[in-house]
Amino acid sequence: MSGFLEIRHVSKSFYGVFALKDISFDIEKGSVHAVMGENGAGKSTLMKILGGVYQADKGEIFIRGEKQKLDSVQDARKAGISVIYQEFNLIPDLTVAENIFIIDTPKKTGLGLVDKKKQNENAKKLLESLKININPKVLVGNLSVSEKQMVEIAKALAHDSEIIIMDEPTAALNDDEVVSLCQMVRNLKEQGKTVIYISHRLKEVFDMADTVTVLRDGTYVATKPISELTENLIIKLMVGHEIDGSKARKSYVKREVVLKVKDLKKAGMFEDVSFELHKGEILGLAGLMGCGREEMLSALYGLIKADSGEIWMEGSRIQINSVKDAIHKGICFLTDDRKDSGILPLMSVQENMTMISIRNLRKKLGFYLRSQDELEQLNTMAGVMNIKYAEPSQKITFLSGGNQQKVLLGRNLLLQNKVFIMLEPTRGIDVGAKEEIYKLLRRLTQEGMGVLAVFSDMNELIQVCDRALVFWQGRITGEIEREEFNKEKILSYAAGKGRRKSCETVQV
Image (cartoon, rainbow, N blue to C red; front, side):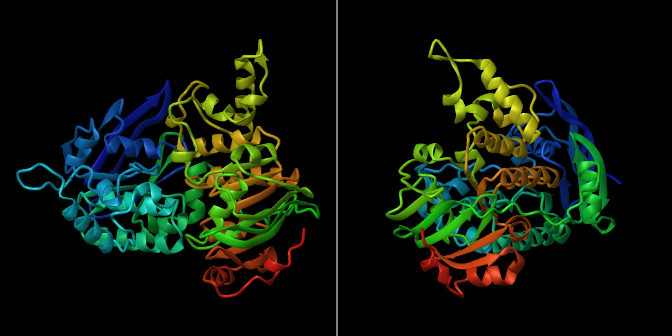
């Protein structure tokens, strides 16, 4: 029996390299159909073909047995397809309401002017129906990453489409927001909508999906009911072999302190922040959205300037007034917003990799870069990070999200760093690539680097970190050693229950 949505022999290549090769499978109406695979498996490419962003080189798409012409986003919308992409497609200088109804803008009768009042009212009703607590009149540029993700979801659901594609919708969401999204998906299913769901979080897939299709290296592997699958079986289908995550992670924490922070404060953001980071330590920063941890880390990297406080590096007090200061002192930074503040999409893979370390490269006649040196740096990091790309001049925007993330990590590792600040280092990363990131973290800490890491996934924080500091309303309320890690304790501190006494006693 044919499905409601039929994908037949779809192929797509970039720069002569196959992203998809002869993909065929069916999706039933009113089902939640998960599409899984490692980064670079072709999931997002397939979703962009369904969404009209890319056109397949070969193959056909059928809905209700009728062949579809999906040559544009407008074609896809007319066919009843809406897509929530992994990377945001929002205009920061427009309000939430304007972004949600950027296509279907309500007009005042006869005048052709935008009816702002109705637009805001419609957006408010939609957001409330989805239980999203965001003011529709706020500029999108002022929202957090997780809030932008919720606006993307609302924007896609505003069109009342029959097929909703969600590409990593929970990558930037906290636990409470993930629960809300799961309920949204269940509601859509009850309304007879068909949801195509991409996620690297296996628990979500088992909570929501009816059926799972697995892709590997651009080829079709299998489609199975969720009832016939286990987590280990899905991972084996995705990577082609089993991954043993049962081994306890070895700690490389040393006695030497690489970074000390004392009484750091920024009015309205954080205050009285004091802690030590040891060489070889992965120090996790936990807390709910808006707790102040990201702002504090931004101050350590010079993105914002603290009002007061002290920062010490290897026993010497330092001043960080700019990003340049932080880089020169050996601090590097991985953003949690890969698209807007990470990659430069119109530049090549090579240029994105070397853009920070470029000053250290040799120059011909004092002016011209030696392209061979740039290429050597790219090749070195591509080997270390297992980055997949067609050629050095390929625009980074054509890489998968996971490979873009690896470029951002590699970019920082080309410098002689002592402290690595990482915001969501595995956001949008599949289980295979996560293992590579974990191995990289082990290598960095074994070499003595200190890591400050933010993970929205609490299981991951518990798995990866040596110690955790928990933030609430800009203050550190809890400090938890690895052997004491548990979700209840972290959540209790994150809700403001408790006060870390050592906040006031850390000495420099």
